Image (cartoon, rainbow, N blue to C red; front, side, top):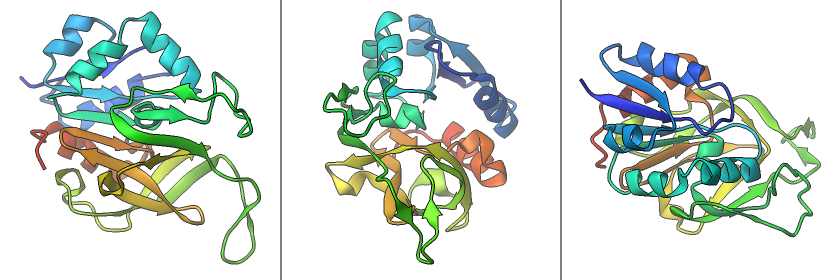
Length: 222
């Protein structure tokens, strides 16, 4: 039986993503774990995240998971979700628990994908002049390019977002999908066996479950 390790570093309720994965394919063995060997032995890795990135990186370090993640991200099908996507980049404007975009200190990420995490600017307005709130919260259309994880998902499908920061990769070719708020921002990144999304597939109904199902049958190749 194929196995998936959902990395547990002590932040957030991970049972919703585990339940969604199980719903996507009941034949998959799902483990919510911080055990190093269980993660190393799993066939696929899911790296979810909620909260502040500084706290996330600190928790990873405290649990000895930083190098484990770098190891498994080197060769296994790997899915980063929300904060788990942002933590893959080089650094973030968000400091430890501090959402002040003027903060000069940047939190260092895992640097598995070169780039930066930046905050949505204040006073955003849509094309009709209506104010857009930060965090970006709710359903939004996703526009994607060709990748195995988008199979059987309709272009411009809606996914559920909750975030104040977004990724800006150095290499634009790793952008697998964008959403608009109001300008286009990267909401999915793909590089070799790593795929990461800013939205929450476990909260995104049919399209989200299909993406998880695709991941559970993905061999890590594009």
